[in-house]
Length: 211
Ligand code: 5GP
Image 1 (cartoon, helix red, strand yellow):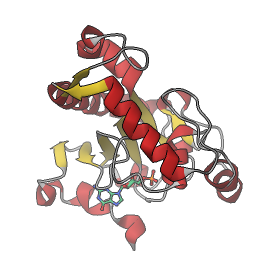
Image 2 (image 1 turned 180 degrees about the horizontal axis):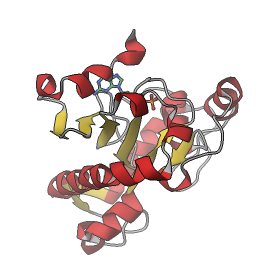
Image 3 (image 1 turned 90 degrees about the vertical axis):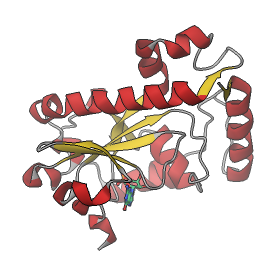
Image 4 (image 1 turned 135 degrees about the vertical axis):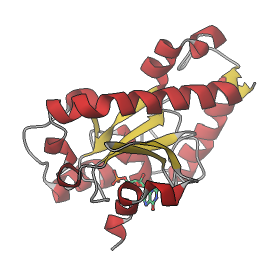
């Protein structure tokens, strides 16, 4: 089924040269096929038992320790690619100036989010590593946006949780009932998705420009 769409990347990374950034025996880093931000990667464990665990409880301190180097490779890749393409045009949101953007620690700290969804759609364990701009044509609805910007999103530092969240309740609370709040300035867009899209595009182009 489509829920197993990530399975073949861990079984056969050689067969996906276009999407695979790097792999070894332990993990695979791929490009998300439907990126919800300018840069959006997924870190997948190749351990078949770990891969089938629910990430909220399955990303134990031990597993996190094993996967941390791959998360860092993904962050580094995104830093390299983003800074090659963009520079800071105006200060006031993620960076005060271009030097801050070019500082890797500052870039990773201010502009990359690492984590998982409370209710993942894909079965194989995957960790999202992405920029925080949400400037992407693949971001097509409220659920997409809220899944990364509300407590539906579980940050790496908060893992593991002590239990698997109730999926129906969590989806209702955060994906459907929660307003869309701008990550740029906190403005509440209520349910107005096309207004939010315009806002994201305007903000992105205000803060960043091609290098
Ligand atoms: P989830 O909601 O399960 O945390 O996220 C699953 C992610 O996998 C989504 O961001 C989605 O865009 C991505 N995705 C779904 N199918 C594929 C696929 O076949 N290939 C790749 N590379 N990414 C996929």
